[in-house]
Amino acid sequence: MSPSIYSSLLQPDLRLMIEENDGPGMEEFCRALYPGVVAEVLEEMPVDETWRVLAHCPAAQQAEIFQFLPLPYQVDLVQNIDRKTLSKLIEEMAPDDRVDLLERMDPDAVENLLPLIAQAERSDIRKLLSYDEDSAGSIMTTEYASLPADITVAEALQRLRVQAPSRETIYYIYITDTGRHLIGFLSLRKLIQARPTARLEDIMERDVISVRVDDDQEFVANEIARYDFIAIPVVDSQNRLVGIVTHDDAADVMQEEATEDAHLHGAVLPLEDSYLITPFLTLVWKRGVWLVILLGAASLTAQVLNWLEPSDDRNWMVLFIPLVLASGGNAGSQSATLVIRAMALDETRGKVREIAWREFRLGALMGLILAILAFAVAMALVDFDRSSVVAATVFLVVALGTVAGSMLPLGLDRLGMDPALMSNPLIAAISDITGVVIYYNAARLVLGAVT
Image 1 (tube, helix red, strand yellow):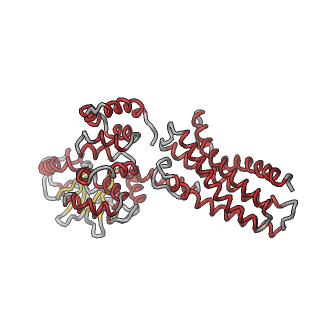
Image 2 (image 1 turned 90 degrees about the vertical axis):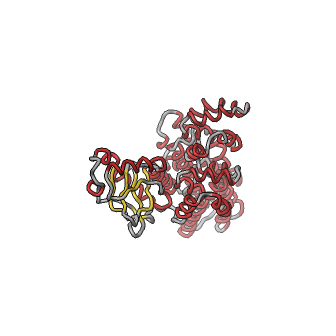
Image 3 (image 1 turned 60 degrees about the vertical axis):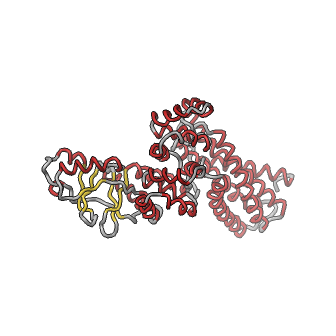
């Protein structure tokens, strides 16, 4: 995550509190600030220092802060505490948030942890973990407000006062029968405005828009956006109410799906975490798979050109121009896609050097892999020296294209221009020009002259 203004302003004071072991100061830091602000400051700090701060606030407050921390950082945090402390934290977290965390943890560790969690929460966790990933069940919360239909408005308000502290939202109240079947709903506004003696069955809305527990999460998010809901009920195959999906979770899904589509459009396998958090080798794999596939497609072009006009000492370079140019262009487009999307999510602020170093290493490794494959392809058509020219060129254009693709959008942003101007076609065009220059100069250097 990118450093925020809060980190710049608050982190020095917080580090001083840690050095002086100022327990009351750290407690006040967690209590006085909004949990999201606390999380922004803490996620820039080492795990051990973060726990020294969190140790001075109760489990309920820890849970509020946790929901704003990136999942990989949450996993790192829970690996550094004892099971008893972790079980209390898990109990306090919102159902959907704790399931997201548990899904990232080692399954054996989760099984060892569950017996320490209260029975009600444990049953809820097992149920939510059983739903398919990316389904409505996997993102819903079971903390919803529900009432029977045969009570008065006055009694309903009294029951809601009891339910409210443990519910994620009470703006919508769902009306169920004795078998938990969803038969209607009320908004809190309508409930407050109704006569105290009115019965819920007389004022409730009976036409309830709901989703199934096995519906795709993107469909659920689109339904919430379509009807401008704050939350939407989730039912099972027998129309029994099992949970709700709230608007904030729907927004997260929409952002996740948009990011996934952007990555796929840029020929990158979708990343599970943000660009800068994703491990280096994972990023190589997510990007390298498509680069290898596209290199294979470009090598077929070389075979076709050779079939149409067999190569000789004069025209052999023409065979590999599509392969060379595609390698650099594809690598550069991948970088541009990842960086532009990360910029849209505000993940790159203050991270230019980190991105440049990461892309340089990525470009060098992926360039080496593609160069070896390009050499093997070229050896099937030309001799060793010419194949070496192709391999060296592929290495250089991939390495340079990767760095250029990441730095150009950041440069445009620094100039106050829209980074999206540095789109894939423009990156490809720049890479093509550079690739041709490198290709012919590599041939001169290796072979002495372009033959």
